[in-house]
Image (cartoon, rainbow, N blue to C red; front, side, top):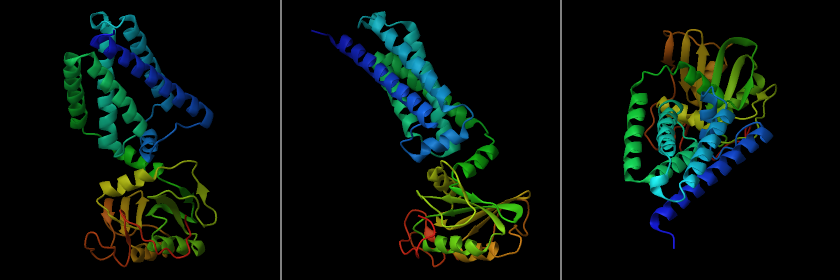
Length: 317
């Protein structure tokens, strides 16, 4: 009959093997489809904000879990025979995960479900090695996460990538002095009116950033992106403290101007050049809709957290 230690180490081997198979499947899927399999929109957000290819991460993960598997197998199910490199690798894995989890929380503002799954495997494997290993891992994870959080990160490039990660489609305009990013939902009637107004107005350059999944956009001369992450659009609005759509963020060499509400956006897009006016450089807020009581929809916009289901006809879906 197997003792407790044997069962624990056998479970560790099974988990390491299962993680290896999961990563191998992800590698195969990526090579076949050209992009990783994402369980949620956060995966795409994180992918857009990192320079290292997902294949590199997954190959490193495959080597990591294979080393853990064969290391545990060599112990013959005796805890005292577990190689020291296995314990060291598991602690190193927690340190790496501390950086990745902190990055997702502090920079990307979105979590990758697949990454969290891998993190769970590493946590459980550390727990199976024993209390001392688990305590050391918790201390290491906390120290690395706090060190990462203490850094003054320059998120300028990350912010730019966050814009691009959420772009479903783009339409270049005849006046290219400014870029306009329209944040909208397919179920928002006010958003639909703004999009409909662009059918007969090809002057402004507009990128379309939906906060929900859409399949089409009824506008001429648009270029669709192969993949986009609506979760990044919600995260960006949340970071800016904006809880209503439509929102138009206009970017010029002088900075960003934010307009909120159907009326303010239609007035801006109806101008001849489509550029921002007035205000100092940097972030500025243009006149928008009147103040709204939280939880209630205004007559000029829809809540980010709820749907406006009275969309007229539908120019996006």
